[in-house]
Image (cartoon, rainbow, N blue to C red; front, side):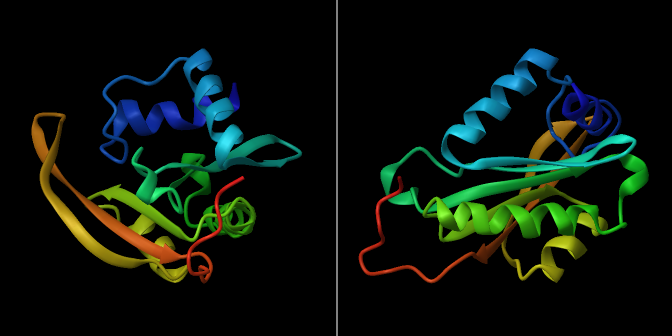
Length: 161
């Protein structure tokens, strides 16, 4: 599966993902199916194949957080800083709003200037940094959390469908 092939180098070769081992194709397929049930998963494809993907997932399991979601985007390593991530996110956000989500959160291992720049350019704002939260490749790593309002909510918010 192309999404697994795109993601595996991020896990295997970088701290961009703090997973230790690349997930298998069946695991990525399961993640995709879970995301599609409640959020969304989009794939960017051209004549040469899949170039990237973006998805939404639950931020937390507690009911009070049900109008917030976590978002992630991954593109082929050669497609970074080409606008692919922006295209994916700009297609994903309205779909999340249609599902009732009002706030998107994104976490990124630091340093990651490309991801920070992408998220800021799309209106995400820093909300905090978890210091020395992940251990990978023999070192501690910080994770920056950013937040973006997807839509104005009603009072009280509409229930998710």
